Length: 609
Image (cartoon, rainbow, N blue to C red; front, side):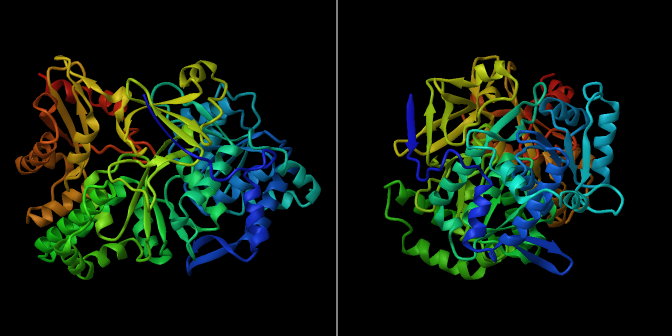
């Protein structure tokens, strides 16, 4: 059993709560821009003074409506400024925020409202208001519950944020302060529900201390990102996800200006106008940016230049990494010379795609392929990969600018201990570990051992305390021949191909390992154009021998990573995408393996017939 810890850097008054972070920013500089809102004429700053005023007004409206400290309030919306505004208003009123993903089904909404006991729901727009109202009307679980629904955008008809604020004008500042200061660090700030791939979602009790201590200590841990002059970032991950919420609180604590964009599809356009200095990114975005750059180079007849530049970036980064491990002196003369050439010809275009001001990126939510990390770091976009779960308020380990091991997820964040059990499972104890599952003692009994949270992930610690994730405990496949197979590395390698959207390795209890491969529509379009082929539908491409031959090459490259017994013997190309709407991806774009295997059981059966 191996263990690694990082000492706590910042302590907080046990009687404080997360709202004190906003008061600190207001006291330090009321005119400082905490947020930026996108409008028809570009981005408009929201100062600490303006944000505090608007938060206080909404909180008074909630108090006037009868909210008492500890009451739960649900929020169902895409990522937008109003999500943040409502979140802090709930906290100022003494309430507990309950996020609901905007893509949630009626049954998921029903369960979360029932389990959390929420009597108020903020819904983003008319469509979501109507959905919530229909759920309330049809539900047996909620039939005796009077739930107030407030629309977050404005239509002049339904109750909205402006009418809520107007209802609170009679609430005094003294009463507001009584509500705001009611919670202490150990009290619950948010009930964040897991994806519920097996059974009903479980509500994770995230405390004020989890959010506030993680925020304060991450700022001290990563000052190069958060304390630089004019630090700013653009949030596109769903704020219903605890990682986005945690980063939002981190930015508030640091005074970094935060903008919001509603979807990954809008991200690249908004990056060009917002120009962030650091960015939280999921691996799929890195893959898309690199694939897009490669495609543009190919269309311009510059594939050889792009390939050479990619090789130079990856080689340069690998030599840096070797030096950090004490295995060399860093990039040599020829490597530095090649890198300098492409730093004039190629890499600036890549950096410009991310807004042109990016100094660091943070990758989380799912594993990042090692080659992608080396490519972007070598191209001048350092990637700091981290690791965490909903139950750890997201980050529990991270690489830093001065302590980075590509391929690892870093060292424990301050105030955190990582332990790897004898069977390889990662255990966590520290400032981010949640209070427990809401009203679920059976789940709590299974979740903890010796005061450590059992993550269900497998990993290893090196002597310097860097953690590497090797797989998900429940995802390890055992073939009929008794061979243990970790699917992650195989899937990541296949997914790197331009044509591939996702890859799912199967073979549990089967005579050999196989794979399901879905196609990426944009990648397919670009691949057809590059090879001067007519456009293919997903259905036609799935059966096209040229497409299958290209994917076979990707499978062969993946097989080179493992032994023959672990290699993929057969694969099938499915003519459907794995998406949020299909229920096969999480909102942070992680694959729901169990859902894919269940939905494509017939395809899997064919692989072994």
